[in-house]
Amino acid sequence: MPSSTSSRARRALVLGLTGLLAAGGLATTSGTAEAAGSTLGAAAAETGRYFGTAVAANHLGEAQYASTLDAEFTSVTPENEMKWDAVEPSRGSFNFSSADQIVSHAQSRGMKVRGHTLVWHSQLPGWVSGLSATDLRTAMNNHINQVMAHYKGKIHSWDVVNEAFQDGSSGARRSSPFQDKLGNGFIEEAFRTARAADPAAKLCYNDYNTDGVNAKSNAVYTMVKDFKARGVPIDCVGFQSHFNSASPVPADYQSNLQRFADLGVDVQITELDIEGSGTSQATSYSNVVKACLAVTRCTGITVWGITDKYSWRSSGTPLLFDSNYNKKPAYTTVLTTLGGSSGGGGTPGGATCTATYSKQEEWSDRFNGKVTITAGSSPITSWSTTVTVTSPQKTIATWNGSPTWDSSGNVMTMRPNGNGSLAAGASTSFGFTVMKNGNSAAPAIGACTAS
Ligand code: G2I
Image (cartoon, rainbow, N blue to C red; front, side, top):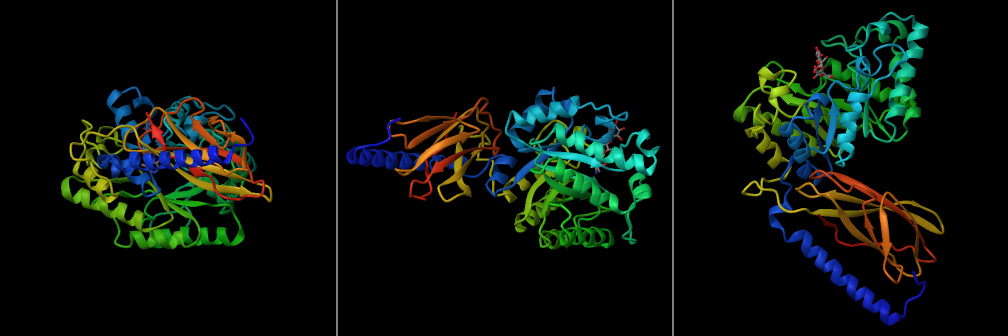
């Protein structure tokens, strides 16, 4: 690439670029059917959030299961496959095959993955409960280290500790091998081990019956507040949100999420399902979605399964798709509450994407930029966008993409480095380093084109 350009050529380039940006603007706004997200994932992405589901590896081979997953969701949580009994059934011998299937399915489509779960009293193999305190501590830390190392860089958020508090008014910790042998400190120890194992993953505490203000959520709140005060690494709190008529969506759901967010952690709705049907089920779902949207730090919603057919409480028909994969009233209400729309005919539009820029690290002589590519309402198989720097700036390095340059060297076209598939609303990103050469201007990002 040449290092200098005549001013006339530069003007032509700028004009050409302006035309490109204008055309790009048209390209992203003209498709009115695609303007509002027409899937759960795409609609949630427009609010900056993910919309996920629990997934079971043994259903991925079922065509409707996989196609509904791929069309609608931007995050997955393995329903059972990452639990202790699945990954370390006997001491020191790890089996990641089922969980790997889910992670690779998600990764090949740009979906996020929630890790569930590292330390939990349930689905715990017998050998763990038989250990002495010293051995149990070693085994717990080894389990966290091995599992997190296996998935390092692939997990958006980990449920580090799950369900460690008792139900009811005591606010006490639940009895478990960890609690009984290691005492309250096991939770802190698990989080500290987890931070060291994968510093990029968000570390969550996850529980149920903590969805409103009550003795149990107060106890979790006190723990999180103490962790933040003492610098124990915790980034998020998961609210499982399993509801039914005996345990409906609490009136103070939003304010409960907000008080946790105010402690300086993200909040996530991690296992949402609501027993019922028709309008009343739809209204409850809508209330949950509204609450999350009203809390800036509510970063995503995960429903506990795709279809009523495979729900852990199937007879309560608690999910958004019925057992024949038809969209239920609750589906439509969730979509519209997220700001989406089924686009009239319900047929998704063509492949579209958006590209957004954010500045990363900056030094006196250079800065790093990051561009996030988000698929629109339909899945895409490839994308491209341009990054234009202002001469004499120079782009000297790139990552997570496959770049080409125009003759001036100022306009970089970036395409996927390998598989460019993204589910509707799913995101990926690439990065680059720009030498300032005296000019700190942000680069111009062209329109995103998708196929
Ligand atoms: O119980 C609902 C959820 C509460 N919060 C933590 C979640 O991890 C939990 O998920 C459920 C799964 O949805 C069930 O699928 O956890 C259950 C176990 O605690 C899971 O059930 C188990 C059955 O008990 C086993 O018999 C079965 O082998 O699922 C296993 C795999 O299908």
